Length: 81
Image 1 (tube, rainbow, N blue to C red):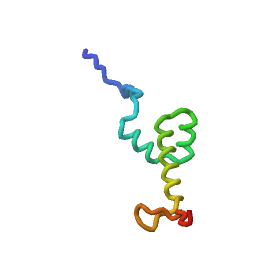
Image 2 (image 1 turned 120 degrees about the vertical axis):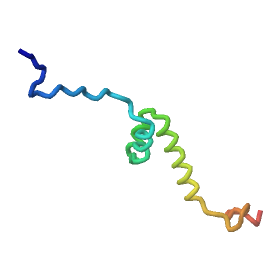
Image 3 (image 1 turned 180 degrees about the vertical axis):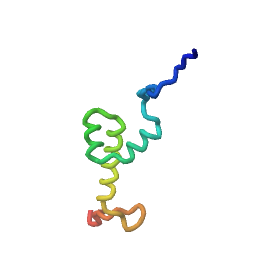
């Protein structure tokens, strides 16, 4: 008599090991993050989020300042001084 190890129940599948996300996955997550998420992370001490918020502040300040008519000449020059 031959004994077989074959059964009708499939072998349990090993659960995926908890791995850290890849660099590409992290980059994609950061790129699709909302402003609220970034602010929350920055408030929690995330250095990358802090840098991003600082960069956005500079960009907003530059966009809000008036452009000079010509290079090197500001629009708010007091010519009577």
